[in-house]
Length: 126
Image (cartoon, rainbow, N blue to C red; front, top):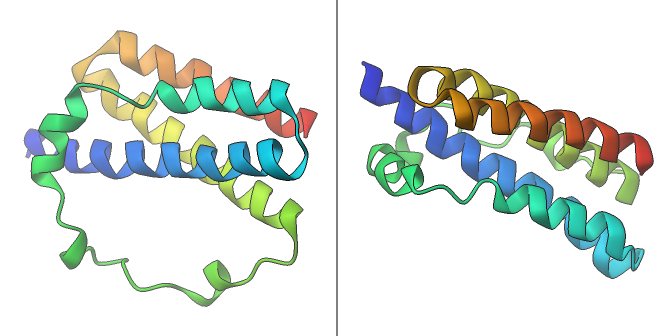
């Protein structure tokens, strides 16, 4: 069962990087905010871990029990709602990664704890 943690890590590394990328691109291309875009890019790159090569072996996206889209995921009112949804996605994923890596690597766990707090600060800045 411990090897199943890799599936959780794989999914959350993807969520973490995808959520940050959306906000990064909005800050970069819509608001031309180089400072925030660069902060976000650096945070996103924290998710590029060697362990993902191992974790991807446990990916089973076709059988994911929550794969179908729910109605709430289809509704976005504006860029602010897109930004908020994706910051929350990245923050939540950082928390999951922080907890899961406590089993495998306390150093990586601490990295995601710090990233989560930095995402909270970026959310406040935006």
